[in-house]
Every structure is written in structure tokens, then in C-alpha cells.
Length: 338
Image 1: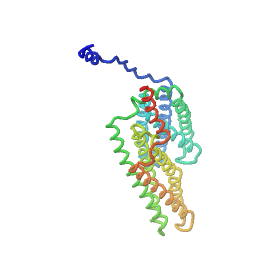
Image 2: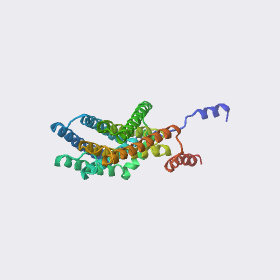
Image 3: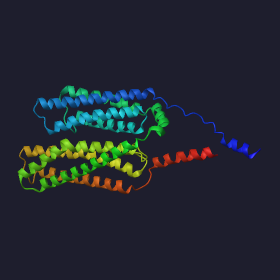
């Protein structure tokens, strides 16, 4: 065979199999999408009913405005996450799972009267129950075998967000997290000031300011810090549970949120109740509540500083899940080379 013939043979392009079309989502995805939307609409209706009740009774204020903003934001976000699920985005499923679970938790606490604002009348309670049922069904449908198989098929093509979106979410995450840290630090300073003062007027001013910040900003900043952080993690190469430092940040964020909702919020409510009742500044329950608020706020501040350090140094390497994920491509390359 001549050199020219060998060269021509090398130039013949190899036959390539056409890429398979993206797998269509199974029916369970559509049903999960519908259940999440129904649950979200019921929860929003319950929130709107509460806002209307506050307006009718003259109790509307800055907290009502914050509730309205959160209602609009969550309506848009849940719709967006549901659309990302239908597009096969793994991070969309993760966000839907987390926030549907949080909704179940908070709604359950509200129904049981164990936290948050009490439900107003049977209509709001009925709406809360209406949101619970499709939420549970939707969560189950998100992880049936057909959905897991479909996500596994499309995740390599669509698991990450675009570079522009990543930068936007990262900027928002950093800005909101800084605001969250500043807010909690300020509340810690006010709680210490209220617990150490001998002036009833000064103490009342501190606790009422804390109540305003808690009602308007604390829940909002923590929630959006969590949302943007999950998108930056689950929607990029870092992954939500692939690296230890990301997983630690995620669970620490959840812990600080629970601390704020279940402990700090309840203590602020109790402190303001005692102030309105004219409780003594020193030596009584108000003293205990004040120092408890300071201790809880200190834990929150230290936790947020810890998360900032973890984000900077990125220690500890991959999780067990991350090591398994890295081993799969290597195993495929080894088997294909044989």
C-alpha cells in the first residue's frame, strides 16, 4: 500500500453515532409539578388571608409589608424551581425538596400552635391542611424510580446553571449573607444592651427594635441566603453534597435558620409581651429572657462567622458521595480503554 493510500485512509472520518435525543420527563414529574404548584398556591392563599386579616383588624404594619414581599417572592421562586425540575435540573429538584420540606415543617408548627404566627380561623387552617397534602404527595413523586432514572439521564447535560446566572446568584449570595451577619450581630448587641440596662424605656426600645428587624428582615435574609447558596452549590461543579465544606455550610445554614425561627423569634415575642405587661427590668423573667436572647444571638453570630471562614478556606476535601461521583467517570474511562 502506498503512502498516499495510507494518508487517504487516515483522512476518512470515523462514523459517529448520532446523539440520542434528550429523554422525555416521566409522568411522575408532571404530577409532582402539579402537586407543588397546588401546595404553593394554597400556602400563598393562606398568607394572603392572614395579611387581609391584619389589615381589617388594624394590626397591619411593617411586618405585613414584609409578609407581602415574601409571598410575591416565593410565588415566583417556586414557579421557577418547578420549571427547572421539568427541564431536568437536579438543583431545581433539590430546591423544591428543601423548601417544600420547610413549608411542611412551618405549616405543621403553625397548626400545632408551636411556633410562628397562629392560624387565623378555620379558613386559614383549611388552606394550611390543603397545602400539606399535595406537598407530601409531590415530595414522594419527586423521588420515585422513574424520576431518578430520568434525572440521571439528563443531569450531565443540564445540571449546571449558566455562567451569567452563576455570577448573579453568587453576587446575591455574598451580599445577602453579609447582610444576614450584620443583622444578627446588631440583634446580639441590642439583646445584650437590653439585658444589661437598668432603664425600662431603653430596654423596651431595644426589644421593640429587635422585633421589627425579626419580623421584616431576619427570616427574609436567611431564606434568600439559603436559596442563593443552594443554586450556587447544586447548580455548579461544587455540588451540594459532593464537598464537605459545602455540605457543612448547608447544614449549618439550616441550623441557624431553625435557631432563629424556633428560639430567637419566640424569645423576642416573649420579651415584648413582658415589656407590655410592665415586668421588672431586673431580677425577673424578663432578665432570663434577655440573656437567653443574647446567648442564642451569639451562637448565630459565631455560626455565620464559621461559615464565612469555611467559604474562604474550603477545607476537608470530598464527601463520600463526592468520592463515589468522581470514581464513576474514571471507571467508565478505564472500561472503555480496554
